[in-house]
Amino acid sequence: MSPGAGNPALSGLPPEEMAALLAPLPAYRARQIRSWISRGAGTFDDMTDLPLSLRAELGKRFTLYAGEVSAGLRDPDGTVKLGITLSDGYCVEAVLLTDGEGRRTACLSTQAGCPMGCVFCKTGALGFHRNLDSSEIASQFFRLREIEGDIANIVFMGMGEPLLNLGELRRAVAALTGGGADFSPRRITVSTSGVVPGIRDLAENGPRLRLALSLTTADEELRRRLMPVTAANPLPAVKEALRRYQERAGRRVTLEMVLLGGINTRPQDAEALAEFARGLDAAVNLIPWNPVEGMRFEGRPLREPDAGEIARLRSRLEKLGLTVTRRFRKGRAIGGACGQLGTLAGGADQALQSRTPVTPQGRPRRVTGQ
Ligand code: SAH
Ligand code: SF4
Image (cartoon, rainbow, N blue to C red; front, top):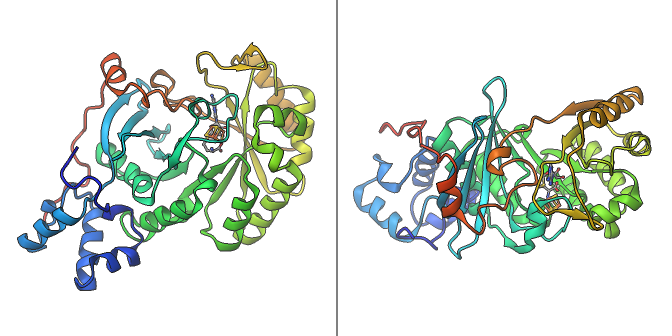
């Protein structure tokens, strides 16, 4: 563990909190430090316009980033997955995806494990350990950027249910948008399994991020069996909350449909989805289920949907007037695709040996003095 682990990590603090924590240092010092973080400083020693004595003092009281990168895997398709071990030993995962045009998207975790228990999701099978704090959330972004370079988008689609950790999510977003990275909220998406109080809170109190709902199926009875969250958050209430969010934030929402072979790809799933989407400004994103070994639904092993099944569902949805996109399958060889996160949680070393390790390509925004 590095010296200073367990001390507050400055990179994950909203600007005003960072300034308050650094008091009685003058405000311009906090600004200098934020500027170094946004340029990719790795340590306080990189901050060459701070007096040496101050750098040493800061190093004793604070860290820059939370957790240690304990594993890194690179998929042949370019996807990178990092395992980050937190100060109490839990491991969370962060993934970087690159699209056809070379734009990078960071997929960040908000909890260690997840309490929601969706039957098709590896993270759900791990159970819940704890919420991450804002530094543990934001630091995943900085670690990915250090390895790969500029990042265009952030999606909170890693481990955990972001809206059950909304306070820390907000602070992390404030740090990323207002301090360490100057990221635009328009390029940040939060994905929820459908936690109604969280969607309402976000609608009322912001920030105005892009919102995605992991709908999976709009057949309420089937959804209850696949996603236990449905019992306390019935779909009509979820829809009403989405409508409210849309009114407030003025944003199109994404309905994410993990396709489970032979389960939620039926004609009635297409019809129920069209009914759910009516009155919403929504786009549908089809995500063929990524295999997770040993996952079963009511006694039967889950399977991937076949090509014909996906094509039929897609054309039904389009005929019903829906806008449909299909997510790339990225990172499957390293367990870094949607719903596969959790493989590093118990065996980082073994995972590193058996796959291609990440070779850092140098710090992208080289720290260059002034
Ligand atoms: N907990 C939040 C965000 C993380 S899950 C949520 O559920 O929205 C991110 C996405 O991965 C969700 O859309 C989820 O439905 C999807 N997912 C989970 N397991 C999957 C799997 N095995 N294959 C493909 N997608 C999966
Ligand atoms: Fe949790 Fe999302 Fe996985 Fe469901 S799909 S168990 S909410 S991480």
